[in-house]
Length: 390
Image (cartoon, rainbow, N blue to C red; front, side):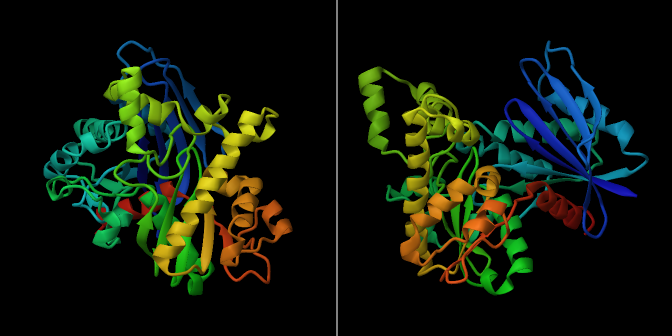
């Protein structure tokens, strides 16, 4: 039996999973190494969530290389003789070059490193684990799956900013993100409702990171995220779309520099900034403070506005699909978003929505409304298997 590992590396954690490399990959193990650079902890569970191993490594010098070594050490004894044949990685930025997953070579790694300025909070950590694995297992095929790749099908006008051409030609354009999630959801829609999958669909990936994607015939047409993953919707701690003049004002009036502005728009804003309480939708729903209600209202309002924008880009709408942590689990958010989009012909089945059914639109709804849980790990595993075994 052979296995495929899937890795999602962040600034302070590495999440990973191991799949049997069957015709359809089957999850066997899942784990994470968190607290990198602070108080590291490692945990491994089986497919049913039963804890198999836990460990607290020494914090001194514990970086992404050490975390990668810990991941291999913790998971190794539970592979039960399975041969690891490939490792798939979620890489946030593929730039304009990569419209599909690719096998990592020296040239690919060098090219991805040039994109670090476009995703400074994500790309360095993605690449650090790839490099660490190349040092540990130079023979192991590693596959990079890009959050931006799904959106490379967008027409040039949807990717353009109205700035001097020399900057656009240097790579300053709308890239879009959450592409691995959108790829999985659109593929799942083909199985669930193939007639809808061929039509005009908006997928709402709502979570701590949130975005919408307009899809026609399974291909990205437009997205709310742009040059970076901070654009578009209100998110857990990210501000979403913001007048650039606000940043100039912050520089002039408060003396803020680039790194302070980065911290403001990525870590201090969004639901957390507006509520002053939490970035977690569950906590805000439970809170009685008016600021919590205002944060939720702004989150929903921006989604409603952007749905209108993307429906215009599509020339109409056949289906709205909710996914992501909030989209999949918060019935109230789904109900509020749909209520504000009644003008598009959306009508919700309250009972189906409360149960979290896949089909949650009412019989008389002109637009189908669905909830499809995303599975980015499985999508990456499929890509890694397909490329490594080709």
